[in-house]
Image (cartoon, rainbow, N blue to C red; front, side, top):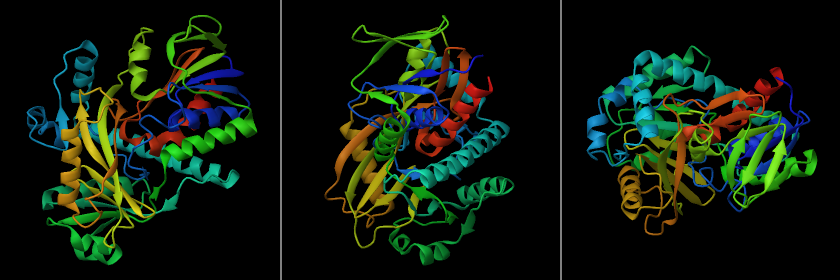
Length: 405
């Protein structure tokens, strides 16, 4: 396949912006299109803000398989499956079930880890070259396990990653509280903690906007917001993107980076990409004297706590089958109640603000689709809950794929 000189990138979230940067650095003239009024305003906007390079565990696993009946009945407030019977949903769920084996869980998790490592290196290279302010800091990350069985499973996964030189450590509760005193206020027993001292945090939406400014100013990229894409035609010697307005744009290649919307867009082109939305929620509350500095994940409740200056961002929940972007008051109430039950002194729960929900683009194996189905079309989508973590590495992998061909 020929190397493109021009590219239309659909999606200005962290994945689309990172893809644009990777191509623009290689001399491609890039135009970025997004239906929102600015960069990073979709799933990138209210995510957990954790760059979890060492925590790329696949969602599909034998552990989750046994819980699926309870999830379908709504017995777990952290994870719900809503009934959907359309062809895309059924096909995705069947593929997901096929990934719920121990071997596939291990393979998928390690493949995610390798991409995360590429992402960490790409982020370091970017920040060495360009000064970008997005609240970036090395915070460390702790996973809290509430039972001995869950902690044993966590240690087994940690040892699996250690064979790939990933630095994590198992701690007792007392050892963890020596590092993060905020854990003294945990309301439920903690059987053990997995700790990674070098994990990072940062504001993904701010990053997308600032990096968009860099590639516009220094690499000549064009960013077009409030520009919804209606269709893509890629069976000629160039790609044609038709906008909702009726305008047609041409380039050597179109690259789909539109998150949860990518699956539907690609299906309209008869490309079966198993990308399905999984809804998540977040809110921000004022920090307190007992707020953690280290990023915290409550494994059982599927909650993340991220310190942002004098505030705490708390994110969680996983709702499969609800593809509305609207905040459901009952689910937001579930999130706030669960967070308060987990770490009752971590935030001022009397003053929560910025209630948000977004659609994570999930694949059955928890790995993004980075491919080039034709000379004039490429895909970089399906990053699930790890879009912020995997964005920079995915952009590099996409560029390598395009330039190798």
